[in-house]
Image (tube, rainbow, N blue to C red; front, side):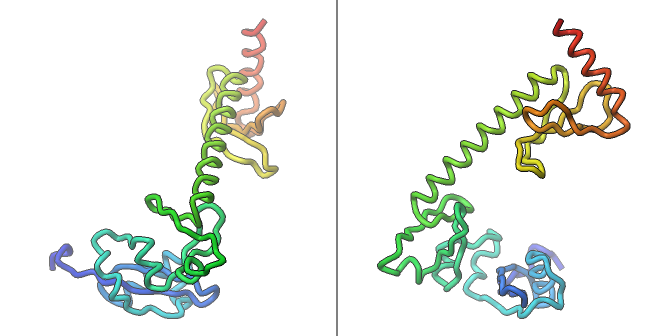
Length: 199
């Protein structure tokens, strides 16, 4: 049978622990249950139910349901800024300031939440660029990548110095790096070469 000719149908799958739901598209209930369990990160046995959701069939080709369609069907969604629930009930509440803003795959509680998230993303991006620049200045000739927050909440990057096998981790501003034992001698030699070049 030609796979493209198979009609995908929408299924509403819910897990039984926290009641988290997802809509999946598949050809039958068993496959949809398996797919839904995977998307919810639970085992087959932890799926509370898998039911048809005919209202969503029209979105099978896109494999994505518009946020407004989900809200219209009584689903609630999470704000991409703060995680606050967005639902038709909240939107219609006269005391609520929920006026959803939809941007691509994201939905925000209102314009202020959207603006706050955009400002935070810009701040994080600038923080990442500054951290990478600091690392490149401190470790000339090394390959600097993978900006992240370390286990202590500090800005950190990975540094692959000349002669080393594995990237070391450097917390921005720290005097030392966390390197693999196999790279200890190579790091000592690299640091010595930096000091010599700066004299």
